[in-house]
Image 1 (tube, rainbow, N blue to C red):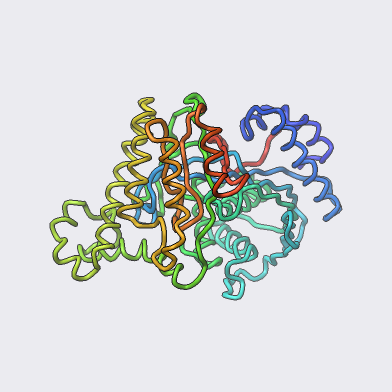
Image 2: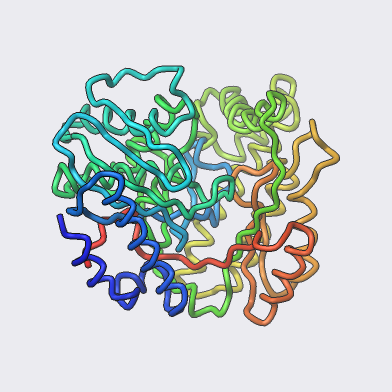
Amino acid sequence: MAKINSLIEKINGGKNLLFQELYGNDAVVLKSEAERYATLMSDFTMTFGIDDVELFSSPGRTEIGGNHTDHNYGRVLAGAVNLDNIAVAGKNGTNTIRIKSAGYPEFQVELTDFQPKESEFFTSVSLVKGIAAKMKQNGYSVGGFNACIDGRVPKGSGLSSSASFEVLIGAIFNELFNDGKMSAVENAIIGQWSENNYFGKPCGLMDQTACSVGGLITIDFKDPANPIVKEVDFDFVSTGFSLVITDVGGGHDDAASQAEYASLPTEMKSVAAQLGAKVLREVTLEQIVEKIPAIREKTGDRAILRAYHFQGDNHRVVEQVAALENNDFQAFLKMVVESGYSSYMYNQNIFDVVHKDEQVVSLALALSEMVLKGSGAWRVHGGGFGGTIQAFVPQEKLAEYVKTLEHVYGEGKCHKLFIRAKGAIKLIL
């Protein structure tokens, strides 16, 4: 634990090497981030009356390859980005966790009752409780702490604010009570378990793993309990391209739209089931094609198309990683576009048929192609049916691209990002 004044001095207005790793080299951005930490530490002292603390940061993530492959035990390519959630935290010597997130009311979690409750579904309380329960079950120590959190991973941005929050909480437990001995991958698995079992949302493991591990990584979920995580050695900054995530809005929370989203993994698995398997990773495209006449009678054609997308995108991840490792960025960009077309034509997660007049993602992809065709890449980002798109934009087209997209979706909707090397960490200044 360190005194707040000492930490502010070490941050040195953002002129700290770790800060540059996390936030880049822009002096204005670094100064702003230094002020952000100082403000949060001041809030912590005012809220809890303590000034011995630790600092934590957990990034958002971007999915780069493998769209809707993780839930069928496939492969993904993902990266941690420079938008993050940060925390100022310290032990409080009790069985109570007290968390104050900027812009939200303070909440508490009692470490005397670890039972999941349906009344707590979809709340931060449930996530924290679930993480504590699973860490305790896995043999780790948990205890009460105070924390102030500031989130800069936009909700609904497709950058996984919930996963970033989960592994941030895991990192706090890990560092404050376990001397940092839990691995980044186990932190991710625990976060996913909490989201599935306490928060009430089924999800794959990609988001948590990318946020927890950091850098550019490929993940193979063939054995989801023991995912194989491999770092990809490639410097995006040197390409002269920007990674732009655009918030296009849209998406609906009504039951019909939720059913549309849920149909993706369900239909993929229904095809696998016709071949005696649990998930599509356990079958080949050749096996699917051979049995199409019988399968389509049971599942319908859309399920087969989604299975075709899975097989293509799952293999494409391997080729994307190879292209990056061979420094063939143009081949990589070509495959990003191919993945996007596959999501549109076969996976069909670009717009939902319930609200067919609202096609925010389709329009954003058309505008992206108009500006970037022949010089960049574009695709749906994340779950689809609204939300976000992703583009790799050459520097000479960046201003035109942002202007074109923000003309339609609004100022500030384009996020210009980079891949950051660090995952969910305690800041050692």
